[in-house]
Length: 116
Image (cartoon, rainbow, N blue to C red; front, side, top):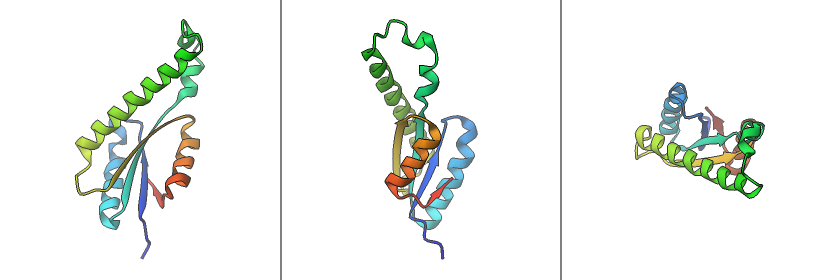
C-alpha cells in the first residue's frame, strides 16, 4: 500500500478551492496523514504596481508585506476552523513569493508525499 504521511493542499482562499480541500481532507483521513494548508502571498504582482510604492520609502514595503502575511494567515486559520475537523493533524503555512516556487519549497521543507 502507498504510504502517504504528509499532504500539501495549496489554496487561493476562494470558494472554488474548497473541492481541493475536501479531497485533501478525505485523503488525510484515509491515510492518517498530516495535512498542510498553504497560501502563497504573491508579492511580485503587488510590486509591479507603481501605486504600491507611493509614500512607502523602502521600509514601508516590508511592513506592508508583513501585514499581508498576517492577514493571509488569519484567513487560512479561519478556513481551517470552518473546514478541518479536529481529528485531522493540520499544519498551516503562509509564504510570500512566486506560487510555484513556494509550493516546491514547501514540499522540500516538509517532506510532502502528495499535493492536492
